[in-house]
Image 1 (cartoon, rainbow, N blue to C red):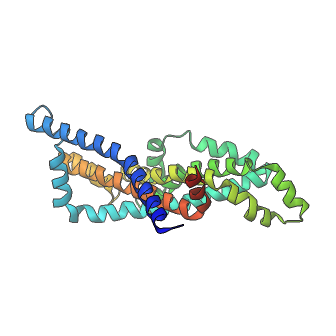
Image 2: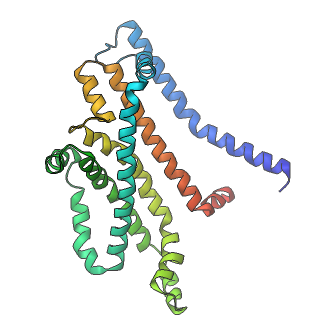
Length: 268
């Protein structure tokens, strides 16, 4: 590929990327301008929704206060997310490989998602106390389900002819899993991973609402009780940013793990 062709391809990808983010950014900017105008006119009371400038001012002014809470939520969400991946993958492999495991555990996996997180969190805190353990438990309970189901469906959707071909060639179960099942199920697996990535931050914050020393959820409650709504919404912004970071990391890992997807998109 010549240099002009490469440059044209790069510019085309940059233009497509800008198009994908320009519309939501413009909408967000327009929304912030409207909220600021309503706040300046007095139509929007600060105890209902503070002005965007007040929120961002609080974010900058109180950054030393936010930092330890942000790091605590980041730790719980990240560790819980990693544990969710381990648990989710193990459950998916077990219920795919063994029919008895499917009959026993699949209904339990589904039933675990019928309990609202806000209901089960206080019970978990009462059992394990005010430590990181109940928070991690809540994150894992919330996040492992999309990973388990997406990977399980990915494994079930693999072409049976490919599996029979591997058996004919004398491949072991591990070789079949490594060379056929896992690569073929990666798109569904990462689909569930993207969902769980954002769930992990949400679950960490919900778990913090039940008590604890640090965390963005704790900071939100304290700010609300002290009528510092600008600080409360600043914490919300940090939660959104943290969720986007987790989502972006998963997208990056997806591109690394499935380089052929990029080639297919370029052909399309």
